[in-house]
Length: 91
Length: 219
Image (cartoon, rainbow over all chains, first blue to last red; front, side):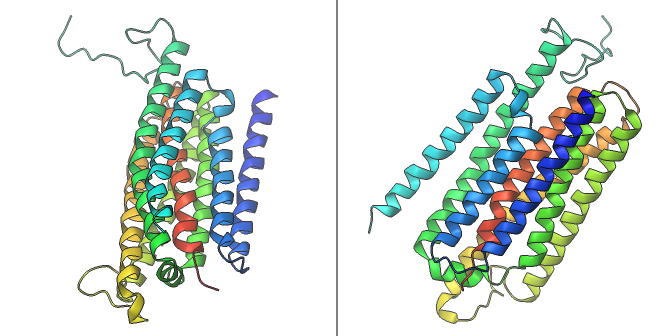
């Protein structure tokens, strides 16, 4: 049944999210130097993508919705890179 | 036309509102509208994230020290609670899609319960931090004293960002309550779906707040 398979998929996504949570907490106890923060943010991005793609149904959304999501990411990227480039080039 | 007659809500799928030609078109418009709103929320929280990254880059030692003072296990537990609430919310959308009123009500109540647990644990954390004089302001005190000023900045960001996130959760709980009260109606699909998008987005914001305030620690 289509809907039952859809719900099973939601459970699998939730399980993957909890595994990623355990992974990021575990990694925080390992001393990776400055890569601790980068690793934690990378795992956060992976979790966010899972939520957006499956729970927020970007996987079955019309192009206009995907375009909005992409536009938001681009704006955020400009905001972050524009502001932080000042800090990085100051040294 | 009587003045007491109300226009159908955009998200009311029992009737097609002007200017839409059919329910599917109306549903897509509601979804696109919600995404547009959520992208303004990206800018809202994004600004605060910029401030965090900026200050973290300026004071890495103080942020690592202050990050060690937050409640890692409460934060991790709360992250799990919120991820599970996203699962029950996604399941609620499925129930609404299939017109299963009882399942919808149950799944909305589960989502609201998990959301309430999250807020309760957050309140417990706040109480502990205030007790430990970590609330920025006159009572703030921090050792080592050399890191006190940038550590206060860390906790200013902590309370501001998690506080604004909690306010969004509170608004979500009110929204879900309104939906639960009407869950016996069989045609709530679009309304539940749009509320679900909001709920998941708040989850995504927390997914990024968690490493910023709980996983930044010294070794």
